[in-house]
Each structure stands twice: as C-alpha cells, then as structure tokens.
Image (cartoon, rainbow, N blue to C red; front, side):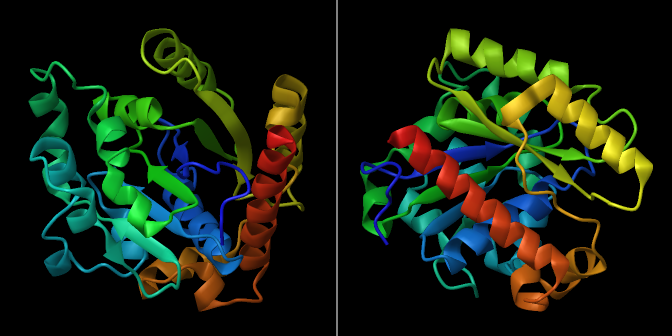
Length: 269
C-alpha cells in the first residue's frame, strides 16, 4: 500500500520514554503489527541493547548477525541489516547487548547524533517501500535516544497509567526541545498513549484526567488496557494480534493504529 501520509519515504516515529516498564517495546511491536495488518509496510528498528523488540517479534539471538550496532558503527548497509519477521509486511533491524557500548563509542564520532538519521536515509530503503519506521528507544535519554530523535519525524510517548506517570515527562519534552533546536527542527510529538490502563481503577482514571488536562489533544483517545494476553505474547515471540487476535489488547492496538493513521492523514490534508 502506498503511504498516504508521506509520499516520499517512510514516516519515522521514535517510541520513547526514559522510564522503564511503561510498555514502550510492547507498543512498538504491536503498533507495528497492527499497521502491517492494515496493509502498511513497517520496519521496526530495535535501538534498545536489551533487544526485547527483537525477541518479542521472534528473531532469535543466533540470527542477529547484523544489528543496529553494525548499522550505526560499522557502516553496514541498511539492506543487509533488515530482517523479515513471521508477520507479513513487518520487518526489523534487531539489536543485541553489543549496543550497550555504543554510547561510549559514539562520543568520539563527530556525527554521533546523526548516524541513525544517515543510515535510515540510505537510498537502499526505497526498495523496501516502507510506510512507517518505528524506533524502539532504550529507557534512558542517552545518545541512542538522541540518534532516534534526530532520525525521526515525530516521537510517540507511551505513558503507564500509574502514580507519578507524568513525573519525568518534562525531562523528555526538554530533550525533544533541545533536539529541535540543535539538530532536527521539524521534530514534533506524535502523541502520548496511555498504557496498562485499568478502567476499574480510580488511579488509572485520575492519570488519564491529569494527562488530558496537561497535554490536551496530544493524548490519544485510544487507551491500551492492562491485559494478560498482551503480557503473555512476548514469551511466544509474537505480537498480541497474532497470539490472541480477539483479545482486548489486540483490539486496542488496532484502534491505536487507525487513530495514528487518521491523525496523520488530517495533518497532511
């Protein structure tokens, strides 16, 4: 399917939050799978040294010979680093623990903040016809996350529905502002998606209210519920849409994908 949003090249979205355990990798995998299910060609870039996105989509460690580490630091071609997955129209550039040393190795590189930007703009990417690129960032505001923001058109922020959820968000917004000022003036916030939401829980409802009061239309209408199927799917190395297609979690990620595409279509109009 041709991309109705960016006729030239894919829409690149960094999925970022410096807090761990907010559903960042889960959102990357399942949003990617939902977009692919809707007919879009999607690439996931695993930029987290833990490699959970790679594991969760079924790329076993012995198949990760070329990864985001080699893409950033060893001039490996994009075409060689991209791997197909078991999900139709969904590909990935995997990660390994090697990436954990990248921050130190990048410091001496003059183009340290632009390496992923340059890699994703190799002409080789055109042959794949990707509509969306989703970058799974590490849970920190380090050089890898800055690389993702410099490379991206926008940042999607998963926010766990828990006490202190909004705490720390100001630091993320400050980082986005600094990247705008120094390296990527067109970077914007794609939106904030509330994850692990429990409608029976007053706290979840309070977090939603606070988020919408503070961030307004930046908060997606779609809420990702706390759902056991979403939690179980990674242990089977498949997205929840494949693990239990009719689960509340799968339906929520389909709705998120539709809302994301709709928002972008309205902005482009």
